[in-house]
Amino acid sequence: MRSIIHERFGEPADVVQTAERDRPSPTEGQILVRVTLSPIHNHDLWTIRGTYGVRPDLPAIGGSEAVGIVEETGPGVDPALKGRRVAVAGVKGSWAEYAIAQAAGAIPVPDAMPDEAAAQLIAMPFSAITLLEFLHVGKGDWVVQTAANGAVGKIIAVLAQSRGVRLLNLVRRPEAVEELTAMGMTDVLSTSDPDWVAKARAIIGDDGARAAVDSVGGEVAAGLIELLGTEGLLVTFGSTTGDPLQLPAGPIIFKHLSIKGFWGAKVMPATPPADRQRMFAELIGLVMEGKLELTSGGEFGLDQAIEAMDAALTPGRTGKVMIKP
Image (cartoon, rainbow, N blue to C red):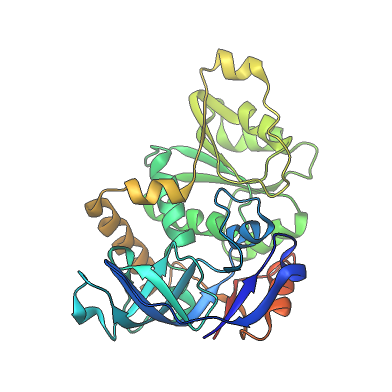
């Protein structure tokens, strides 16, 4: 089968290439999926660089999520799954014509759901909804999020509105404020504004936010600490800058703040099946109602590996760049 691989770690556009690989066969509890579309996530790019939480053995096929048709079922898997259209994530190598996935994690998707939505149904949306539940916030609570114009940020905005959670959205560029405002998002501020903390405090009020989510890193974290109320929670979800968090000790001590990390790869397997089913039903419902838009930022074939990486790394793009075998 054709696939996109990397034989060394480095910048994605420098190390990826198209190559032939043996088509895998499913073993106990696995399915073989004929890939229809597979997105390029940030964590896929970090994996290629060798900077993610998991470093694959090399050479490795890229990609971790896809939508496709079940081609084969392994031992212990209901053969009725064969021929079903499913979304899968946690895949080791989805940028290929075929990929192996765990049957227990496969999500059958409605026929009416577009491929570009089904291809990215699990990793980012499920991370977003489990992250929101991780915060233990309810109707009327304030949450502050950075990188509000990212995939997870936009999904959290939809979920927060649906659940009645109040959300302050932070971005790094004034242009991103205009983009999100045009999409209908409210309470959007740019951290490039020297007075962003004061403006944020005026929106949230004196009691402060119940929780904050940071996906940027660096000095913005100090502002988030200032905006949290007593017993507030700061969750670090990512670091687009790669800079260490700058955290002032005083407010953390005097407001009894908590700071936690969140990694979907650890949270998803630990989520009880009943909760998984409930959350996926909520996500699918929002997609089918048109409230949660999971769009494509362009499709590239397996022979366009470098072009696809360049597109995925282009600032200001909308939608997920997709690999289409």
